[in-house]
Length: 82
Image (cartoon, rainbow, N blue to C red; front, top):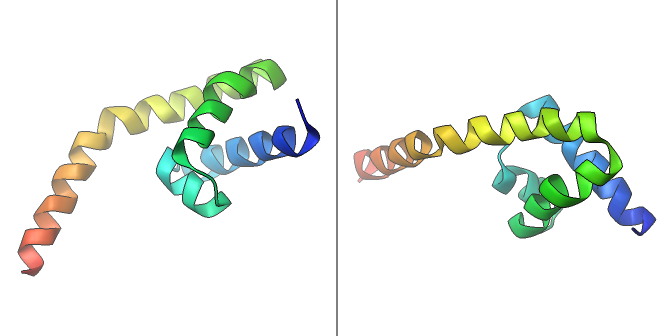
């Protein structure tokens, strides 16, 4: 694994743990695609640091469980503003 990828994986994982950011939010902050963030967190991070990967996985699982609520709230705000 190239060093810049390894560094990016660790930076994104630290950001997700610190802010409980979603994959999309992290992708926006780091200027990469959400697919890249997802691959970094699910495939590359476990190879680098297994314990950190478990912690990040918990945050991602919580975000996934809550996403339908966030989507509903976004739709509600959209139509309330019109």
